[in-house]
Length: 447
Image 1 (cartoon, one colour):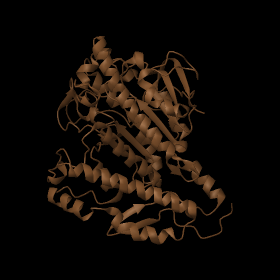
Image 2 (cartoon, one colour; image 1 turned 30 degrees about the vertical axis):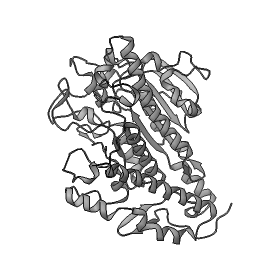
Image 3 (tube, rainbow, N blue to C red; image 1 turned 135 degrees about the horizontal axis):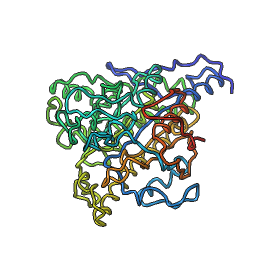
Image 4 (cartoon, rainbow, N blue to C red; image 1 turned 120 degrees about the vertical axis):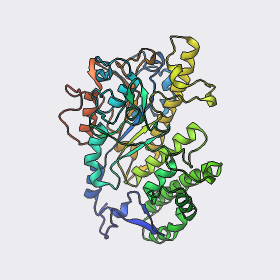
């Protein structure tokens, strides 16, 4: 198809009452078929989903290698998306081991997960890790987007002191390090994420925030007329994409407002306290955060994100799946069958969130394709068997359009996880000679 009309600017925005809402990629923004193909090649994304406190390994890895594996219990929620992901065994994070530093495996494993660096044991401000994989990608991709990267999570951070045997809480609060001494904070409140994407999130004064929420009771009320005006200039496919996009925005906003109306949203928000806008249930919280990340990618506001299903050493309980026990103590199961069964329930619930994310990526349009076609997703934990604080053979899933889906692939014994991360970055067009303890590249999972 040859497009001869003057294209809309790629950064076209809907405007209203000071609110800017970036649009998804529309055909009307593409000046030619060649430009469309070039845009599709350059729009690549990286996402990381992190699950805390290790796994019941007997129920994570398939017993068989290759394509004809039997899906183990923990991975059952992923079965509908099997063609989109590979299960990778044999990857290690040796730098998370003690190496003479004694206890503190949770602090080390989280702090080194995306850096491959043995973190400094400290409870003070003299932190030391390394630049994380996501931030190396964000440095390059962030030149083309409004937000270089988004760091999201579900557990509120511990702000001060030690969270694991002499290791600062900074190591367990986040996965992302912009440099060796600067961890990036994780956002847990969907209202804050929404405001960062589509409104002013700088006002931390409680009364000011609540006033802003009232003024922005419905962002779509501000932009509906602009959307209607623009829709008349678009073709049928573009109008459909715009309608889908605006419906997604409205749905997320309504869910946030519903959460606020549940009680906490009527209370002024003190700085650094548990904020309004967080849904009551674990799954609803996870889903709205993932929907926001998908929306941000669809609008090309960012192409890089990390999502912490929980903080390392998380003590969350899960009564909704009949696990009232705290997660971290339960992970030290001592091979007790009852505790292992409960741990598997938690692991399966966490994997179900990965499945939801793959569902959203596979159904969300990105120009002529779907978001999953241009996204590289790493999902896993930084501990294998948590009872032994095992940093070898980590539970790992790599998904996306650049991956050989439907397979269980085993790396050679002793392969650093960072080798696979380097290959992921290379597939995204980001070249780095080394990451942490990498000693080469591992690309057996790439299509």
